[in-house]
Length: 118
Image (tube, rainbow, N blue to C red):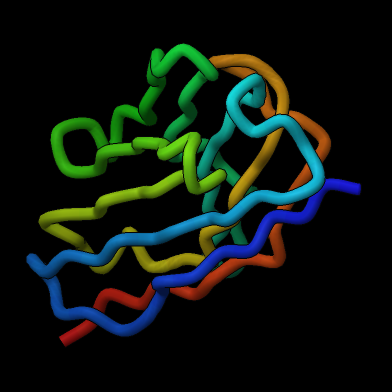
């Protein structure tokens, strides 16, 4: 059974940075596409970024140039570096496993809260 555990969320001021981590177990991580999604109150869950097993990436337009997704196959971990954070980035961020560069897989973490506020 695949397990995805997120960490790194918190409260940050506008313009600040955070790095989220997602540790995976129960799968051959190096073969596994990964992604980050977010859901703000009253809104649908949306794509933030995805990365394939080969390192190709796909970003939502709203985060391009500010967020970077990366992976460390030796640590079975995917990261989301978030810079120049804005209040509208406030949401619960979810790690996703499987799928393709464009579409999510079936495996989800429990989420980590990111709040951008002064």
